[in-house]
Length: 209
Ligand code: CO
Image (cartoon, rainbow, N blue to C red):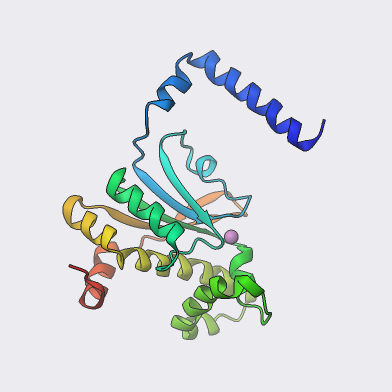
């Protein structure tokens, strides 16, 4: 069997398993979604959002890209964010990074990566903002891991700069969370980003209404 036909075989088994537990499983799924979370994570094949959160289809709205970036001019992430916050009315927006992130490492290499350059540049900007702290970490792996955490933090700040998040925070107390998935242990780490404090600190500049 080829890899592709294995996928379709797996799908048949999965459908059968779901229907054996609940014959209306797909009928209910088709009726709509009401997720409480928007998850923005890395595209890395080892970081599977539903598995690590233990959630079922319908529970989390998901966006994944290289190194879990929330870029102001990326129509893709901004569309997902606006749809999730304004239409689906999610209550929590999560940015989840992970240790050993290839995107983070690639961003720090002195190499021309072609079309990836403008995307990875966002990570170099995070490094520049936190240069003193990062340069003080001598161990390279620890330094990269800290950059992973700081990148998550800065993407949370980027979320707070958007009108959708500011409005939903005011209207219904929407919150932003920063997490890191530790690929060595499987554990999810809450960076405990102080959302109200960041909001207070940057609203002077980024308040949109
Ligand atoms: Co990654």
